Figure 1 (cartoon, rainbow, N blue to C red):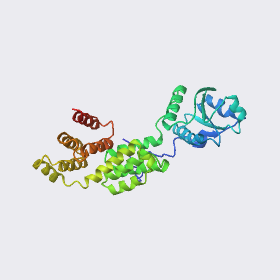
Figure 2: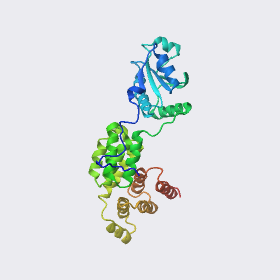
Figure 3: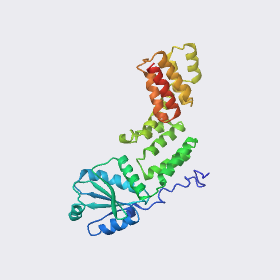
Figure 4: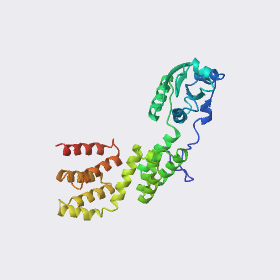
Length: 316
């Protein structure tokens, strides 16, 4: 198995700056005179996306960078050409461009796909994937994707130092990569550095905090901070055994169990509170379970099973 850390102490096999064509080789401006060479001829070798835009077009300014990002991520499987319709009105007329942004995709000298108007990142990705499939192109994982996979594997193996180094390298190339940011937070948590995790979270732009990876990491942080206030496991377990109706003790026990890695036992403790008194403390047990689900992720088998058990209690 390839080592995550090389002999010099740096992440091995994760040179994110190589292995793909430079952006300047993939994206260019063109005009009426060079359209045949830059688009028609170039599309004989690989698909070419043509972005028709204008300086006064607000949606164009948002769409263009997203298209460029997607083209770079395809690692040379396609090209992008930008055409300013104000400077190339004859070409826009020939291609019947009536509104912008307008995007055409050419392959083998022919237009094969396209769209008009603003698009989301997910819609652009779908468009690119469809285009590459039509062209029969295959794109392997990008260097960033490979580094993310290695970093996650290291983190899950408890190798928080190597994982942090890899996440840090990713963030040097993509400062707003939500998965890498979330991974850094989880590495801090794995190293029992809740203060560092909180500090890291506070630097994340609000727009990124709604991303699934960040929601999960944020929930994990809140759970870790709550666990610090819960108290020793043995004392809490004794309290619950002495008084099964002490919901606060059982709640604190659930938080402490989760911090100790006893996820299933923690979930069962919260479910027991709900079974005994559903609305205790303004549904605190149910709300804490939701944090568990966010921290674990929606596809975690324990999330699926606990959601089912919760539904049975709530709707029985």
